[in-house]
Amino acid sequence: MPATVVLVHGAWHGAWCWERVTALLEARRIPWIALDLPTCDDKSASPATLHDDAAVLRTALDAIDGPTVVCGHSYGGFVISEGAAGHPGVRQLVYLAAFMPDEGETVVALTTSVPDSPVLAVLRPQPDGRTALDVALAADVFFNDCDEASRAWAIAHLRAMWLGTPEPAAAFAWKTIPSVFVVTGRDRTILPELQRRMSLRATRVVEWDTSHSPFFSQPTLVADLLEALARAAA
Image (cartoon, rainbow, N blue to C red; front, side, top):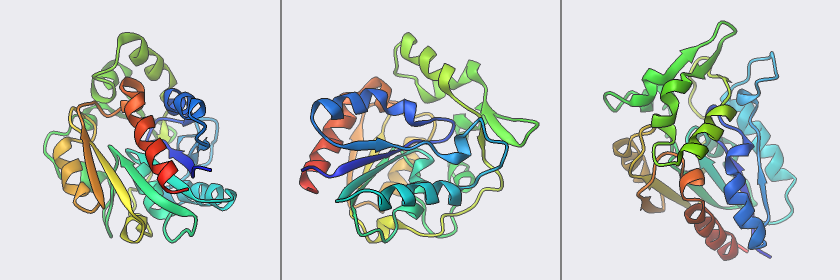
């Protein structure tokens, strides 16, 4: 039996973003779960933090009987770094165009460490404390290699999220668990320069010629990688 693939979305997204990948995993009989993180719950009036997101992941991992492959996209890299740390069931981490933080590093500090990051111009603080995206600009930053229908569908699903005071992860799973870092070479959200720098921390690095969102533009690439890791971790 292959390992269970656990999918952790990034900022402003939800479990919905994995639909094309999970359809392929289903067809290949790879078990999976896709989480919805509390920081991106637009129906909750209570602020949530990175640590809340990590706790949701930890609870999900505790409920799985058997080995897991944990994949985090973008901000989800912070979540898997903390939430999967030291978990006995996790066999492999995948940082998919993701932050791979070390001690003391925050989302803001890492993003601004590269000059002129386009994602900073897309952020729109909201009166309730959440941060949303300028939908007129977001498609070219997040989905620049996707077809028009995919871009429109994704933009319609994006949600405001609680960013709060940027905080570092409290633990670092990649220091003890094997990891694959996927660099996305056409990324305008987490720029490739920053991805390549963080990827030096990973066990293995691959690079794809995609935007920040290969789960939309190249879902077969994502599914192939996850399937191979899930079967190897069985």
